[in-house]
Length: 265
Image (cartoon, rainbow, N blue to C red; front, side, top):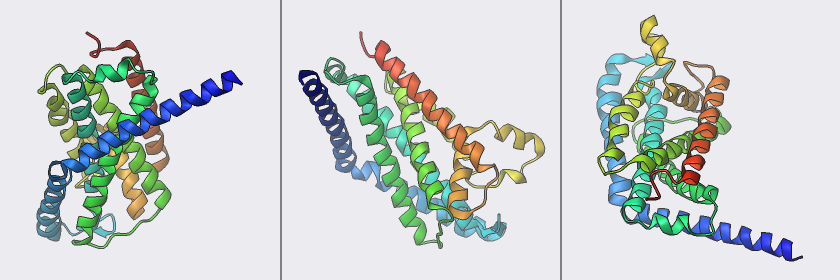
């Protein structure tokens, strides 16, 4: 009986801790909405105006859809990726810099609860921005969803992948400059080269092969298949790649938290 009560009380502690981390993250996101939600909406509006309206008229159809419709899934996914990554890397590094991450580390919360709390908070921002971008897109073009299950599962898993990746960046970062290097020099180029604005079938064979090693290509195309029913890559392998990244990065994050890498001085 005592053992059962102990397990229940620990589960309650974990739940309270998880909710607390999420609540703090959500409050932070909504409190500074002018920095977290407004800029992506403005940026995406400019993408729609420049690429969709102006350039799109010259390009014509792509994949059986007008160019504006074709780029919408890519722009939504790009926003989800950048904001999921950016939220956790800034939030967790801020906790390190302010040294209040140590309070979590010495608390009775297991590392997986801390990880789940931060990742969920970052996914909230990524998905919220994705929803804002979707609403903006409705002002420019008609949207449809070919397969809801694929669309929702891909965007959730992709948001999780880049939340985990952002945490790894935050753990190793020693100064504020370190949290901007990966997004600027790795994440942004990979995103733009991930088929957001074009079909990789239009590329020369060499560059099409090079693009095939970019994991973001599979995420963008799986999401595009969910929305439009067209994809440059098979959907099942794309799903498998995303799941592998979730498991791999999740395992790395738990290991780093357990060892206290970059956290315990």
